[in-house]
Length: 154
Image 1 (tube, rainbow, N blue to C red):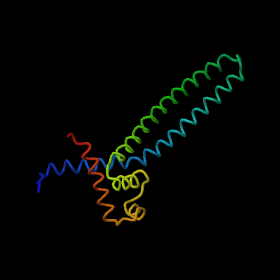
Image 2: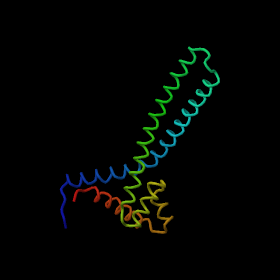
Image 3: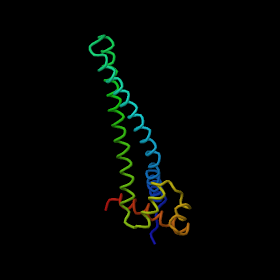
């Protein structure tokens, strides 16, 4: 039986809980993505409203046209920034899904998907898949270990 030093155990526990935190971030990231998409759509609609107003104004007052053009430019900048944030969050979501899907054991993978993608606690997961709570906890832990082993250099 392998004996580990206190420092080795401490490093492993840190990696273990960092992995759980990464997987747990999925639900919050999903909520944040929904907020960003709503905000992005809001600014697109504002830009379309202003563009439509400018078309109706024609070549009327130069000052108001300049301020509307500046407003459009600012809105386009906001849309671009929000779009970049949406892409970043989406990349993180995909990374969590790919991390879970990289687990080879089907039972472990299914438990991780229920736990982290569907935001179910392990008791609810055990009931949903008709496993004992103890077996669900064991498979969950094995799934996390599988992810940790994939992250280790060979």
